Length: 317
Length: 80
Image 1 (tube, chains in turn cyan, orange):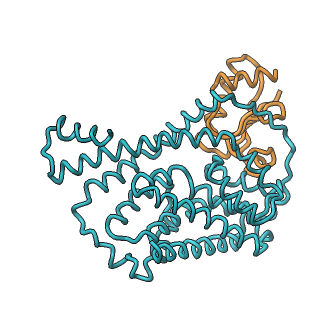
Image 2 (image 1 turned 90 degrees about the horizontal axis):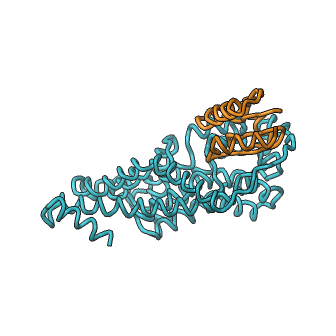
Image 3 (image 1 turned 60 degrees about the vertical axis):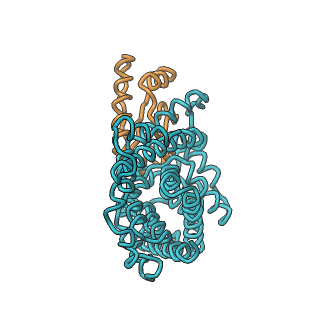
């Protein structure tokens, strides 16, 4: 139905000839844009409703004094559905530690939350298919669980800034009124519009790249540098991705262009994870609660795990 | 009566502060809105996602989306 709508616009309304490169590109662009924005709106809305049942306070209670492993898995999963913005990373970190959430479990949450989210999954689904979206989600969770477990095993509590342990809750009562279902829907609509406003330009850019640049750069342009045959492709992509700062939506146009031009899947996924999970501004924020040594260990473990994921998928995909 | 807005200084935190001040003014009560920006203090108050709104020592709101101005007025009125 969407396809015929796009066809009608291009061939009947614009009166363009079928089969030309430009009209095909435009047809593809209109079809993809509508499809992805429909997907985005529906899924962000549904996730926002689910999210309203998992405020950070509740996630904190669930994870408090959880054993490692089970705790890491739960934390990575809750990272998907707990609303979290990097501006709240510090109070959230202190709140978790103060409530007895183990350090490694806290990290699993902090890693999974920005990396595995509905916007990333929907965009990968719309542009590359559901398999890639599922693989990204599964490996994102895997990275969050493993990196958190390693940090837990290393017993690095001493490398958290001392003042964090001196903060004790004033025990202030939570009196946030329970939302009625209708109120949750209103909030979810607000969140959906808010997120769409922030990401639409990136999404349109990504689809534009797919539709228009398609024919103009040779498809194997990047194969030589970043194809599966080049053993340095993955570390290079990760090294480039770490200092870059973007959310999942912002990195999508780059990812799409790289894929189109022959970069292999594992390298692309590793690049996307490096961009979303590790960033300079986030490091600066986390530096307020972590000593530089722990920050370095965190970046090191994440880099190695992400590179491993990249190699794994280049080998099997 | 005591009204605290907690947030390190993001756009939504400023909005929350303005809303609280406006609500107080429109209700015609004489209360200062205290802004808490220190991260450690915010954490001590039990706010995990900012902005937070605490009225008379009780957390009434935390995080996004922000409540409407009517909702803020309601929350304050309930504590007068």
